[in-house]
Image 1: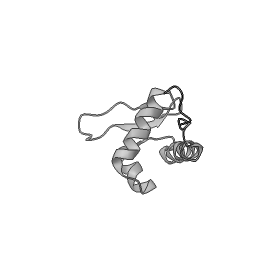
Image 2 (image 1 turned 60 degrees about the horizontal axis):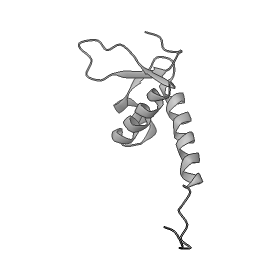
Image 3 (image 1 turned 180 degrees about the vertical axis):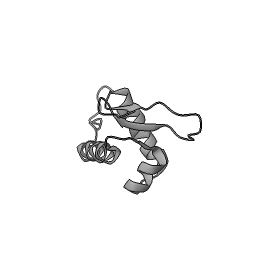
Length: 86
């Protein structure tokens, strides 16, 4: 809006710091063998939906990878990219 003294917010740095901390917690909780979303959610005391949101963002940016799923498994397992043991 031209001519107004209103400024747009530039984000919340505290939120960004928390996101980085959560990414580190998720990566450390995954370990080398990989875990499912419900396993991670239970270990981190977070809602499954929130864990899934972070995992999908981390997968998109190449931090984690989806492990091959066996037919009998109900959930995919995720592991840090490049450190997964099939």
